[in-house]
Image (cartoon, rainbow, N blue to C red; front, top):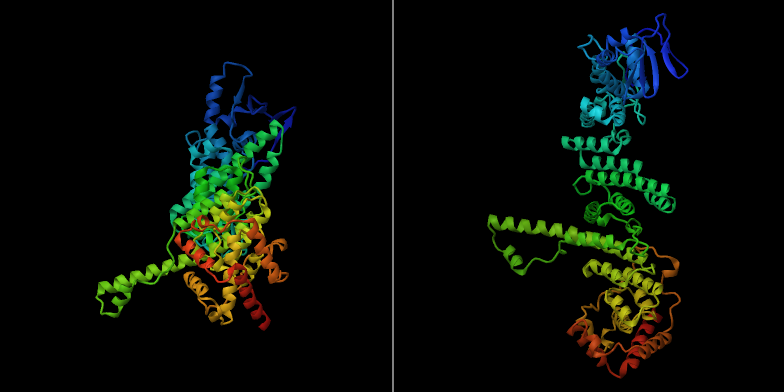
Length: 628
């Protein structure tokens, strides 16, 4: 840390009965009061250097024993004593910790060159420019101390010059910056007296972030704006710095706010409001500093900011900006990051699902359709000789297809994340069915390679909401594609008594048909079943799907092949559901259009009735299992 010493006389100031005075053979002839403290001093050394005191003394000379009161003195008694000791020639030391207060006090007393050459303002200015602004740590400490005198420092240009100095150093290599006495890294320290101590020098690119995290949000925001305007710092380093700052000043926001909300006293409520307002301003400032480039900050960090914004009731614009940025990187998210607590008094749900719906909508708005095969005309066109323009068109086509492929890959990842999220929120008894369905339907069907995780979520929701009526259960299961269920999922769904009859029938049909095709017994199936398989785009040669295990579920919500009911029990379960449910009416089967209606006709046309048909299918499955 750089410092400057002035004066050579010993300190002879002392206190007596709440009065500060100076040991001297000459009696005091002036009384100065600063913030309630009186000083018995001498006119000659003070008035010779302080223009303001000259004017005040001339105004009060007609009054004997008149006290000169210095109201709102910047820096208080400590800063005034520095100036007074300078006038007496007493040894004083200036550093980054007290130079701001001394500069403001000297300016208040008007200790300029017009009064005396080599006055205090001049000496402080030289030290500030030649030493303080040249050191990294000194600039940080000085800038931080300007917070106590914001108006004075703005008028004197101290704040702006410190910010410019810091911004210029950030853009340099750390080996070219005098990082004097950094708390986190020890480097070469060159003081004004010429001594230098060699220490370990940093080599990391983000060496400046931790030291800057000590600044208050107002000064930090202005400094980061200056750094970004330079255009020399990569966006990822800006993002890392913001993450360090947020972790320093926004830890455990949810716990603090909940604790403050639990207070009942008026003073506690005011304190909670002040804390929330302070943190809200800090959060919104961080959001405004986020780099616009995708990937500059992690998706996990953005979701943490969104949780804090939700907790602190930040502005809707800040929430929407965070939601938009999260959507750009949603494929990097984890299920736990999306579990944002709901603190709204208008909602009884455990998690804020509305903000997640907004994120998913923003994600789909980026939307590029999945990669598709090029039109036949273009394929034929490629076989002919092409002009230069045709080659350019084909290049652009392949480039767009490549970007679409990347988008499709991200949709596959997001589908897994969303299905895992649905499994978590499905346990909430207060979660409306409409919101569950909205989230499930936000992801297009092609993004789900299988529906096992979605079936898990539906099963959990049905267990947590046993009071759903038949219509609501049918509506819930409309998002499920039985053709994309694995064998294990089908066997579980076939005996799931909470599912609507239509779903159970579809599951049994596809399960048994797939088992038959896997054993090469397609010829054993009736012609109408073969037609129904073809109508549903099922390839007889395709092996049965495997159970997805990408999402971890609690033990109570898991399902497996072990413990399955026998075929007889499965048939009895179906008979029971047939008795209690009248799903198979023509109106119901027409809900999804003619395709669903035609499937129903084909199902009804099966020979010897449903009971014999299911017995035949179960027999085929049983014989296949015996072989295995």
